[in-house]
Image 1 (cartoon, helix red, strand yellow):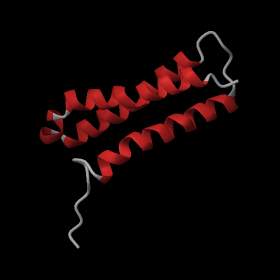
Image 2 (image 1 turned 60 degrees about the horizontal axis):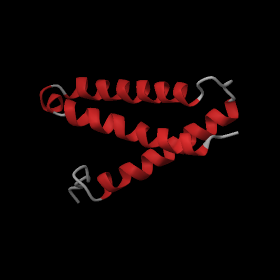
Image 3 (image 1 turned 90 degrees about the horizontal axis):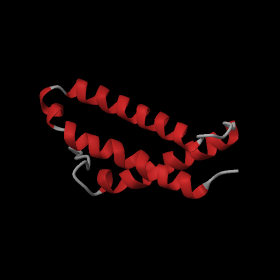
Image 4 (image 1 turned 45 degrees about the vertical axis):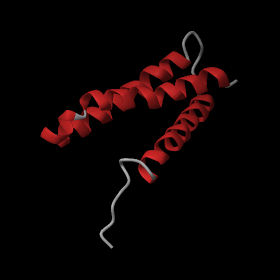
Length: 96
C-alpha cells in the first residue's frame, strides 16, 4: 500500500534538497565543472537513498511499492525542473 501523502512530501524534498545544495555549490561550477557535476550526482543519489529509507522506515520494503514511489519522484522532479530548462536560466541556446 503506497503512502501517498508521505511519498509526495518526500518527492518534494527529493527535488528541493539537491536544488538547495546546488545553489551553495554553484561557485564551484566555474572553477571546476567536473567536480561540481560529480558532487551533484552524489547529492542526488544520497538524497534519493536516504529518502527511500525514510519512506520505508519500520516497514518491509516491497519492490512494487518502491517502483511506484521511485517513478512518482522521477516524474515530480521532471515537472519541477521543466520550467527551469524550458523558460528559465538553464534554457539551452541553439545556434541555428
